[in-house]
Length: 571
Image (tube, rainbow, N blue to C red; front, side, top):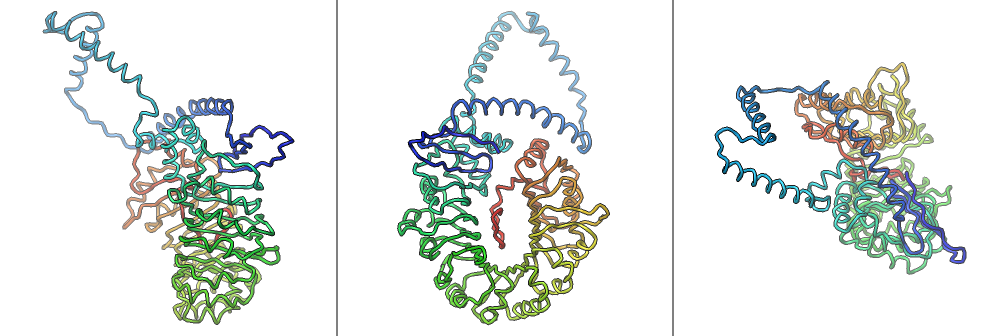
């Protein structure tokens, strides 16, 4: 991550700084809201030109040539008239260069033709000199930008208003999930975002900051109706003991259009409904993680559960085990809720509510802790009872330790409606783990949040035996494990339609043509979308220029807007 520093303020100004981290760079804004200096911009442009010159020959020529030699099949068609025409054309060119007339052409005809050729060449040269990046059609520019990292696209957009508009449209289309992180306390100045894509970010993460810094979004997202926010996440260190009564009014316009709000263990002393939720009009997802032992105070009285949220579809409520009196009124007023996330202990302590007819969920998402592992047999029986009563159709589990599965595989495999598991723990590929996972043959979704490791003696595939698998999410994986664990499922499983990997470490050399040819032979095959980090995506993009892969589509990870039921800060 590069860092562009701004000139320091004079001590007499006594102003603080605010840092906006856009994943590619951290921007420190000065009191006038100015962005990067012209000198820094020129240095970055020179570095970018040098890197591009060094990259293109290796990426385009060497990689594609190697791939074509090893995988592609070339078919040449012989034309017997081609050689004759080619030789005649060459002779005419030589005669023209030596000042000789072509055979059968008179002097007047030759001079007239020569004059036309000179005029045509001059006109072409004149028109060619007028072609610039700004004169290309938006579709052409969009295709060019597909081969550039986001930092370079931002540099292009900073050159002029026309290119800024084109790059902004590209950014909105290709990076809808890119996250802007606001980290520092609110300062007294008003930042400027004219040189960046601030207004076009759809996801905002606020951490290590006074919650009133959210008012900054009123300026960054100056037109929320045209560019509505998709998600706002408040991190664990977001805190303020007292929030002014005018706070909600300052953020009203942004909250009207936001689709998802996540409070991930925040410290807020106040009524969360009066503070934020009353201003939302299109809120579809709400996640609240509230642990008393960490000093969390958000919605401490839970009165926000007594309100009706007409557009809400998903609620995640994760807190210390307790009986929640407001839970039944919430489901009575919000029968349109189709997805609910909570802990097994909360379900058990509020089992009367969950057994009542007010609960009618499409998806129930349960978090299982190590403390609850000893009671798993009891919990399995109760969850199966709820499924028989029709209180939910599909079930997903979040496991904080792999031993919860390996030591209770029979009980977990007997859960009715179980179609997804979220491993929020270290996953070590060995015979015990792969055997346990293979017993869950009805799984369609697997999410692994921590890096994956493999024991040297293990020869099994992580997803072998899960015939119905459709979606795989992995935070981090090594390149060699990608080849051993992910590619086999692409080749062999016709139902797999999505693979999301936030980061691939190491040099990934995918044989995409061979994989595509193998997959396309499967019966009833579905095209699989593979979402990869920007670096890996660009390597593949450059390698397979103008090569169509009917069974595989590679996309940027930051183009995926999927919201996961177990919301955590890095999602």
